[in-house]
Image (cartoon, rainbow over all chains, first blue to last red; front, side):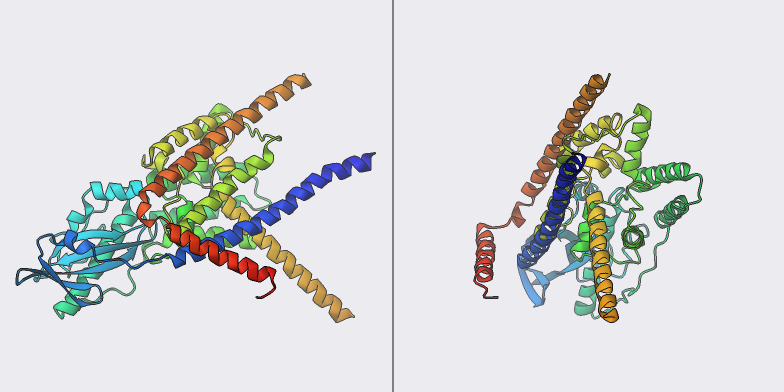
Length: 407
Length: 67
């Protein structure tokens, strides 16, 4: 009787595990398919931007691939071309018009994949107008000769970089004046990178077996994450960042060292130790929920009846976010997290409602966002699962080789 | 006492489920809203047809062992 009970109790778990594996493989296959669809539907841009760039021009003459001369009657009034750089959500392409003296006349963003609300911030701040009147020989560096837009630094930096590249391309080809472009820009190592190193350090010490103050170390790490990565910098790990790297939109490492350290660090720790160093230790949004949970004495409340459904909800959302990003080749299109909504007060109406719901729920349920809605944790779980499969395969192959060697 | 605990647990199960459902609906609405603004990049019917045809012919080839 006892045996029968044990068997019947064990069977559903085994069946669930089997379905988990099948669904994980299906998710991986559909992600690959979405990547392929996205690549197939990439199209070449049309020079519809020219009239918008130089509305006073009556005629455009293509001098070479995507480089134009603009005329008003018979008078040459300027040149136009495209420049490209990597922003927050992927490549940002700008069309730049330069007058015959080398001054920037106009800048139009032709293609971008930035999060809508952040891009709107850049436009509302009139960032493109800040570039007008500058010369191709100017540095056009955000923080140096151009003021960036608060909360949208990566987007403003990408627009400035792309403008500089386009203007200098015109200068080199039309004026014969090649301005040496810095091949390797200066490595930017500041507060974000130092904080991240400190947080990894605290996590490393906190995870040591003999360390007595793990709980305290975790709280210090969470509060630092909340204060610095959250409210001060608004740089949490999001699905848009993961999608950006997945799509091959890798930004310059010298100026984006923080993101390489964050993503690379998490990946390395998962692959080496099968542990997630980010979510429970220094994710700023996780910390915000946990602070509220401490205030409201929140409990775990894991519903046993709907466990499977609730486990698969964030996995489904993460899968959907990756699939959409790959099909549209736009990392930011499926970014639904409410991190920026809390830390920078930027987001859609739905995100503000969602944020309110999550913050209220955090008072009673421990980390509701992390457990039921966040797309980052399922990605780390998938990586751990793949690691486990590789390890199992490795063990099987090694064991077979050893058996063959003995016989 | 045990009965009371079970009732309390049931109540929390339903509250959690409702909260998560509301959350998922809000996420889906936000994604739909984002996709609508991306209408210029929307997948065309022709593209969907091409993909379905390609996948279908691939499956038939696989069934007939003609890979």
